[in-house]
Image (cartoon, rainbow, N blue to C red):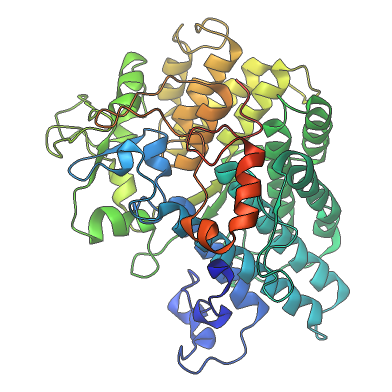
Length: 480
């Protein structure tokens, strides 16, 4: 199983987003590595996770294309949903298992074995590791479906791991794992601010992140296991989820390579002009006179003029709206989770009459407001947008799924995976058919070719269990 055969020391030197001064004492000779600490492994896994979720490099992931925020100019295979031409699924699988989960596992083992740490220090660090682990496991499930879980990451005992059932085994266990560590944030002492690049050792912030992740897990189950969904959501909200943009789970990138946001590498350092705004999102935002347009996109066609490239077709870089200036900044922060996302989950919960302390209108409004403010919009932008009858929750057309789904999707711009997931969960907005291939939007990644070749028996069983290893097979929570 190639994904865990890469020696752990080969990637512990990945830059961990520290300043030069902070990083000096952690420098390593890659040809003669010394003992790698739990701190370095935790930071390395953190950056690997952010990088993978932020990148738009078509060799790494194509989530921003699947969500139809971006489309391509000349090379359009990925916009037409060719996942295997560049072994995209293999790359994503390998990155998440090897450079995130395996590093986190190794970090956890080193924390447990460190006799110099107090019980509270171990509890706090293990809680932080667990949050990122659960986040990554959920991301893999929501990308592929059933995956190796209980037998994963142990090459000696399980060289060919079985796939676990996502609905009945993995998701409930992820919720249990979050519940098990929530108390650790109250008395535990986490990694210091050098190693913890998300919250700078603020354990209260980590607890909100953990509960917000638990909220996400619960909401995903709302159409398939309403009892567990409601209990999970209500307990997460009671214990404290994000309440403002100040709570967002961010990684601040730096201005010089290899410390920059991967988007800068793809859009600026590469010197390429591979992406423009997709007509899917531009057309919807134009219809709503959305104030985020000059923040999401450049006004390269003239002040207030925005035109999206035909999704899945060859497109001119100069005659379509280019991606916004913020996305071209090396220091633009990466995001794992934000207040807007949490607010839209709460809007759905309120529609389902869960006890979450507010109405769907309130949470929907909070989500839109949080998004506009995060991107740099003004209070006037917020007020003007929310008073539109086609935006305001009581007057916008459609079911609650359409209202929440459309505005949730708009708010997730630059977070391609979540935008794609919003569409899969709510079936809104209506996305375009890829022009060249005529293929529908995939509902999952197919399993890596390496899994078929090296773990064939378990791959075959998993494929049968989910209804076929196809790009259009729906995940268990995608019921509509």
